Each structure stands twice: as structure tokens, then as C-alpha cells.
Length: 402
Image 1 (tube, one colour):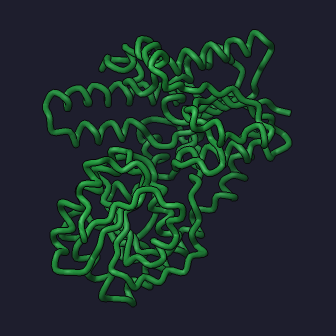
Image 2 (cartoon, helix red, strand yellow; image 1 turned 90 degrees about the horizontal axis):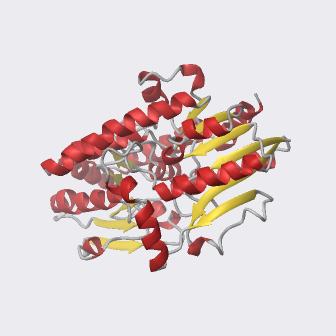
Image 3 (cartoon, one colour; image 1 turned 60 degrees about the vertical axis):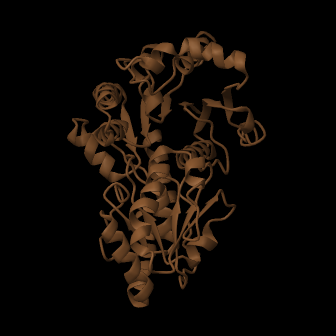
């Protein structure tokens, strides 16, 4: 059996709550299902994860470092992480704490001393991919695969372009330039890179990564194609992990820019997702419901007039947009939201950028049932044809075999 060493930033388990973790979990368990491979995982988690971990159940050997929240542990990590956190010229742009680096490098050095020799190494998420040159020195004969959940330097560029404060903007520009250099150097060290959509694949190719090294994969998503979208309500849905800045800022933009244009209607904005900030909760009204985490988003998709995703930050494919389209709920989104999804404006989704465009599209979908049903059917069909996770997993495993 071929030894596959998988190193990740966040421990995967069934029903993990974030999109990247779901994709990591899906492909790791596909590796384990294949009798040719024996995976070993190094990752990080928090105490709340301990009761959810299922790696032993699946027979996946692992070393999980638990990030303890107690004050003494936080202080020790803080001392170790001073440079990685506060130095804008940090060679990894501060994206990976020094504590994580020390844990990973010390553990794999111990593994090597004990005779462990992987044929393949999979690095999940850019923070871990950045360590490829150092990992290559320890295991020079292994093939290294970079699993790029998104092209991180693109997200850094958008953050500095979005920033208005001059000092913060200058700092974020330094971080962007550092990240771009480090990310591309790390990918150059790897034998293959797996971006999670074709647009990121094209971006890497344009940045100088050879096409033969690029193997796009389909991200894991909750497939809601069994939902019978009915619409019929005046509710519009925004869906995402609300603790993340890009989702929080998007929700606030919707409330401030779009909802005032719909004040003469019965439209209600439903904001769904765990971890909403107090500043968002305080914006609730008869026109805005902040629902927080819900056990099942399907009923909300099924009866909503549409899903709105006017994302202001972020990079890579937006799984929430794929999930919405799979359910048949008409999706309204912009350039960032549709990134990596080969959908056509007015056919499988509606493209909007300005508040006025969102408001007009919402009004049209509520009044034009035939148009809404057309977009619903087309979106479902497109997701079924272009985002086949099982086929993607087969190609991924074939790549490992070769």
C-alpha cells in the first residue's frame, strides 16, 4: 500500500461546519476507501472537535494537535506567534502561525526518524501549501500535491483594494505581494496543484504554473437537487458562515444598500448562518431576520423567492452559490460570487453588481413566475452536469495512482 501523508490546517470530520472542511473530509475519506492507499493525517482542532472526530472510526491514522483555549496556552502561543502575527514582512504574510509550523515540522521530522517514508504528500489549504519547500527537504522523494481551496493571493489583493484606511491599505498591499510570491514559489515546489475550480486553474496558469501540473477538482457541496423549489414567498435568502468578514460585510451591504430600495414591498431578507456578530443582530427589523445557524437550510431555499449573494470580498469558488443553484432557488450574484462557476447570466443565474440591479432583479423574480422557473430548472441541470463530485474523486484518485 502506498503511504499518503495528508497535512491540513483544520481537522476534518463528517458534518464539519465549513465548506473547505467538507471538501477536505470528502477527498481524505475517498483516499482511505481506495485499497491502494494508507493515509496518515496531521491536523489541528479545538476541544469542541474532540467529540466529533471520526478518523479512528474510518481507520485513518492521525496526529491531531488540539489548540487549547486556556489562558496559559494562549499566552505561550502568543509568544511563539509574535513575528507571524505582527510582522507585515513575514515570509508567509502572517497566514500561518509559527506555532502550527513548529508542530508540523517537528512531528514529520520525528516520523522520518522512526522510518516513515510517504510516497505522496497532500497539503490542504494555502497556509499548509506554503510549507512545501521545507517539507520537500525532509521527504525529497515524495510527490507533493497542493490542494488550493482558493488562490489566496487573489483574496489578499481584494482585501487591500477594498481597504479605505491609507495605513491599513499599505500594510495589506505588502501582505498581498508577499503572499503572491510565497504561494507561487510553494506551488512551484509541488509536483501537482489541485485548484477547486477551473477559473483558479486558469489564474494559476496565467501566473506561470505549467498546465501539466494543474489538476482541478470539484469541491464538496451539499447537493439539494432533490428539493422541489416552489418559491411563492417574498423572502430572499443570504446564506453563509456569518462569523467570516466577507459574509458579515456582504450582509451589512444588503441591509444598507438594497433593502431601502425595496421598502415599498413585502420583501423580507433572511440571513442564515452561524456566528452572526452583534452589530448584525442589532440590524434586525420587520424587513430583516438574522436567523443564525439552522439545522436544515433546504426549507428556506425551497420557499424563497431567490438567494442573493453580493459578495464584497473573497477568492475561489463559493460553495454556497453552488448549493443554492443545486436547489433550484434563483441565485443573484456578482463577479466574486460566480467566480469559478461556469454559469450564464439570465439563463442559470442573474448577474447583478449595483444595489439597483439587485432590487430590480428581485422585483422581477417575484412578479415573473415563468422567468423564475426557467432559471431554476437551468441551474439545477447545470450543477448536475458540471459539478459531479464522484467523477472528480475518481480522477483525483487516478492522479494519485499515477
